[in-house]
Length: 73
Length: 365
View 1 (cartoon, chains in turn green, blue):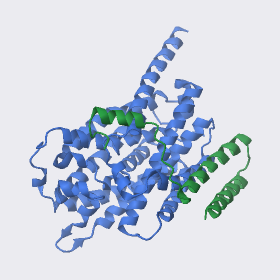
View 2 (tube, rainbow over the protein chains, first blue to last red):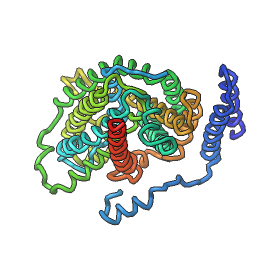
View 3 (tube, one colour):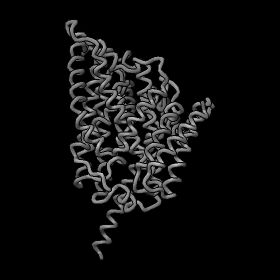
View 4 (cartoon, rainbow over the protein chains, first blue to last red):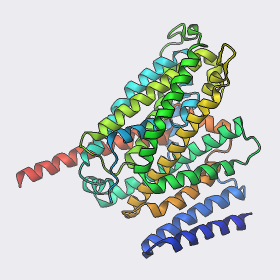
């Protein structure tokens, strides 16, 4: 399943790049990096790895909760 | 090429975006039977913040979004801000996607995989986002008539079922539930309008952002207040808070002389339209902000990978309907407070200082 999905992304990426009239390397690099992120997310979800969602602002949330009990529920 | 949208079309887009998919949820449920007071307070508190968003866009008049940001904040800070908001819009789009798929799964397609529904919606949003904000705004002008009609009919029919005693006694539990309901409403969906800051490339006149954001928000919020209050008066405060989709349940109770019944499907149409537009706008904002963040003038080439990443993100960020409902009705979210209020406030103060300094310098030379 994972291989099939990755292959799907590769086909979509290749087709889009083929359709572009010009291919400056910066644009191609940005496109491929963003597509790689999409593939990584798909693999995480399909493979059922329990990777927690990063929450960098959790500290602030905890502080608000402490200030106002139940406020962040 | 700058995308210039007439004010009326932009306003229609703001109305449908604000209504979005959330009007069907238990908005402001923590306020209990004082929900209408929570709505009024939330509207009053949201207007200055939305005026602040409009003011920031007004300061950039005559320049595109990318040029305006670079002029006011400088090249690298503007890129960092754009990347941060790209992430916010992407995450909001994923949340809306999961709301849509959860609703469809709960109501009509329980055995269809969520990913299939999410893919269908995302492909449609991808097409719309690639066409740009001009097409989305024109589409909004066409669809808004239908949305107004549906919401007006739903409200008029709900009035036949309401029990006004559900609103009494007023302020029985004091002011705290109203405050909690107000914060719920500000969090989702009122201040989500910050995403629209990144959608419009340029405005017709310097005061256009005010004419677009404020009336658009006012119309949508009044509609939401009426529909939510009427739904609460039909179901009662307890059932309103415990149902995932109280507006849908309330409209299902409409029965006019055993002739007009099952009107909930009509409300679903409005939900579908609003949800689609919100996903498309979030996708557009995420792609545009990402392009600005990476230093590109064109954003369209990034729409496909950003859209494709929203499908798995919708499964990763939220796993079930309970979590979707918790996020839609939470009181204070740290990232929401940061992106909807704190960061815009800092950006506005910085922009005012920089623009004032710029004017002073140009006057002295």
